[in-house]
Image (cartoon, rainbow, N blue to C red):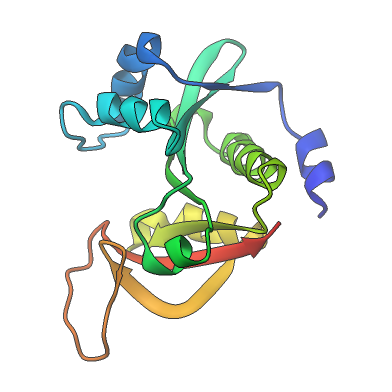
Length: 178
């Protein structure tokens, strides 16, 4: 299915850049999803945003905040950094808004921003435990493929024979041509 067709099939979803006025909403969404964040996590993200290193985006449906993500222009992962590939990170949609196209719309929005900025590829990742099943299916459906370097832990490539816990830091990094 073409991206334009995907966008036509979505409900009315608005995406905006977050600011300090959105801190309470971001914290509430994070708590509602049982996401453990450092107390000043979102303030730090806004500081990175003000420095031009990333964007914090909030998706709303009919005026109600439904999810958020980060578009990181300077990702930590070495392959993305070396090839100037921005990365979509921390993509979350509140449970009551899932399966309505909100995550897809946020991804497509980030891809459009990156393409307008001259980026040729976009990066994204998912964790390797079952909690990431929906993300795993969605990202592949949207055309993302593994970067070919295997699993990472905290954005560092896991060497053959190395043991790492299966938690949110154990990820597979994906890329997509824009």
